[in-house]
Length: 226
Image (cartoon, rainbow, N blue to C red; front, side, top):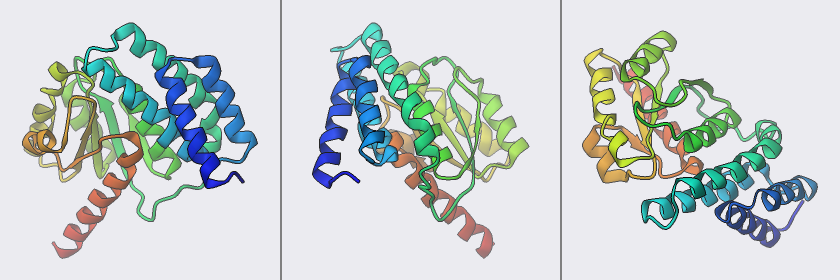
């Protein structure tokens, strides 16, 4: 088992490798993670994921453009392919589990963050219904009704596409859905999420499971009281 200082060093290197869109270095580091017994869940959540978050920040500031973002995602996916089996076998289980419908809102084809979030929920023992990207708003409503999922997670990477989020939330409410809505993506923050009518906001894949767990616990309490 690696020391805490060594783990932090590796997390920083994973972050930097993704941000530098260095696929070879990323895969090399991921093999080192497994070899040295570093927590694969943390390597994804605090290394690869944070590197992609930094790349998204640069994209928003127009320091990176679509080609750079795609190269960063290539590095991230290469690392995720190596670490995902260990993540899913890691036993990182939350006390409260549930089911979640997840997708990228209509008009947005960027599913990097959504795929990371999906992996985190799977690792935490949740049942995940993945709608993919560029999802028509009514599909969120239909899938939630079909699966009776407690959480609906909606993602957007672009400022233009995030404007569809409140429409999806309103559609869920109009259908009488009691599911909690969790939103995330580069252009959002907690204030915007509240204005959109979302129940929760996850700034990163690393925080999504924790936030969803809080939402589902509150939902269960409400049902018990009702």
